[in-house]
Length: 430
Image 1: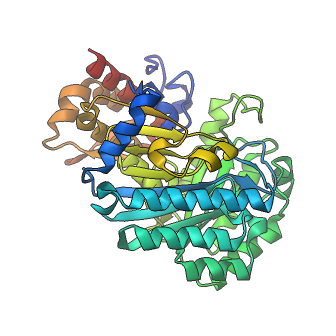
Image 2: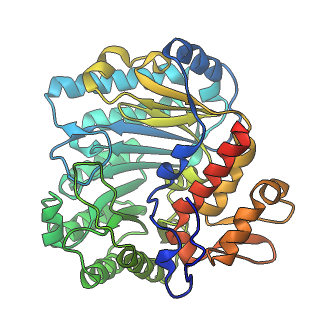
């Protein structure tokens, strides 16, 4: 991964790299994590849980894998709705896993600032199961007084009754998977709700007393044009929401095909980036997240760029604690059988040299869009040449105190993270 020296940044910003990394997770795959053998993983996790947290910035993720229908664009662990007995058994195991970890020194040593229930479709399971999970976390874990508790949902699941139950359980933010307001485009994605139903669902959430409502939009979808994209943005601006994440289409092999047209991709991104930052009271929080300056910042989303510890529960849930990263297995039946104790649950575990903890602040530039430069010896010593190249390519600018991503830099943010990851790998491996 390198910057094209022949690229003309101001006039053709989509040519600066030959291909685009489309997420921070993709960019971090080249970090030199090493697999932890199954025989050692239990002792490593147990040891981490026996000590105080090294960070005050901590979040919780809970994965609910069940969906009423499977969307062809989704890259996350999911499966069609199962028998009620399977759902109950999954939720019971999840509750045991949550409670078992809560008793550890690490879990109790600092409050968590955000909880995110994703999937899958969390609201596809009975509300009683979902709210019990939420109440359990609130009961057993220390939370900040303003802890953000988010539940993801599809449009079709939203009802006044569900919203009332979620609010009573302590949920204070709902994230709705819209992807597009365009009915024809949504049908190609396997989504059943039309434009009118989306707006009705958002209105229902707002009338239920939620003041923190967010949606996702995706660009580079089949049938999408600049006209339909601008219409999506206009509908967004009139909807009762205060946050939005904008993503390029990312799929798994065999799913929807992603068009290879970086010029078109850049124009879709730039249109949204300009529009959302100019909405009344809105601002950019990350290269993909926009929202109202007072209450539109999704804490769980921004935690990725802030290197927060992430405690993750459920099948396919990925977490990180200190220098250990893990991904729980995706098989529901295996989870039900062996997942009660997180330290012994089926998972892939990886560890990185603790030197990484010294360098990880550099991702603030690519994932939080700015990095303090004054007195930042680490950044200047180990990444100074990369930052100079980024400035030359007009991906980064600097003011008196900070390095800042430009609009073009925000488009290529994951590629910039890849450059940093590659340098960190060399620094660690020698």
